[in-house]
Image (cartoon, rainbow, N blue to C red; front, side):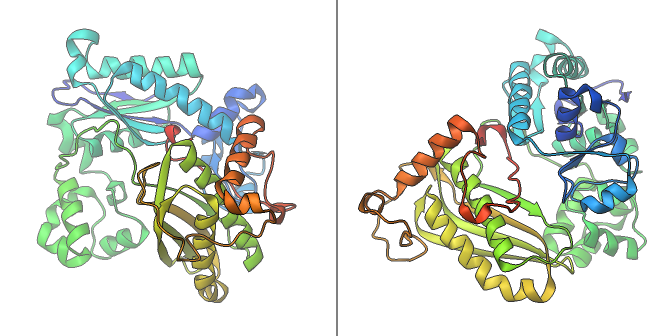
Length: 418
């Protein structure tokens, strides 16, 4: 456990992040896995325990490579229903701690606790009690970073992992942040880090010393301004509860194996089915379908199509996604593919869309199912399948094309979207 901090002052933002979430749920539910290296997912590692991480295993790594690095690892299948249930339990504790909770993924959230000092104690006290409750009531370890800004709180939780609590006092922000490597800054991935390293910039202090004009010249206006602001402790964003996302999405890492068009179509169809069901469960509609691909040379491409009318139905979303995939297939066959993702954007509340004639085939594709009743009520199939999935589970019924194939796993973004 990592604990640090002195005077807290304005450090009232908590970033709470469950440790190795999927793997921790598996170890919680199966005592035989505790203390052992655990890999969730076979072909591609969806998550791994800290015992496996110490052997060099990382999320999204090819399963064969992971087992080579950690031959003693125990591989378990993903159980998304169990992870979603655990997430809901943890978020209930968050909201019982403070009404100001901003969820950012299934296993992490920001909490603002500045107004609770007279009622329940300092932010450090609140963070410590929250960690104790999550462990006692849900059975999971959680790390909490406490700071004046969202960015610093998230960095603090990352430094304190696993199973830690780290408070960054306002008068010690420079001491905490500047020695860290540039990769700790939001927006610094492998490409940006390589550019910075090429100029002898390795720490956050180096970024701050370089100055904003030089950063803008090197990285462009958006990235340059952002990195300078973060390196100089400027992050005005507040914790904003109740913000409804404007998009939902899912992606699947595919490893380095060549994939046939039929296999990619099956994987994409599985993602579409689950995202469309999440739309309907949340009472939302979408207008834009976005396909995201990462090729074998690690370059990326994004393709999108905006539907004529907003919808929550599987068929038009599926038709748009498949056409986007078809348009990109020549690049995939030429360069290989290591990741496929889909996002549904321009979300709105169900029932607010304006009805129009189906003039676009991707908006209203002709059904391949026989029967006039299905033709007259294209939403009937979606409703029937939703009812079956709700009662018997997501694996109860699926597409015939998915028989004998791995359709992949859709990872929820936030528990309220499940």
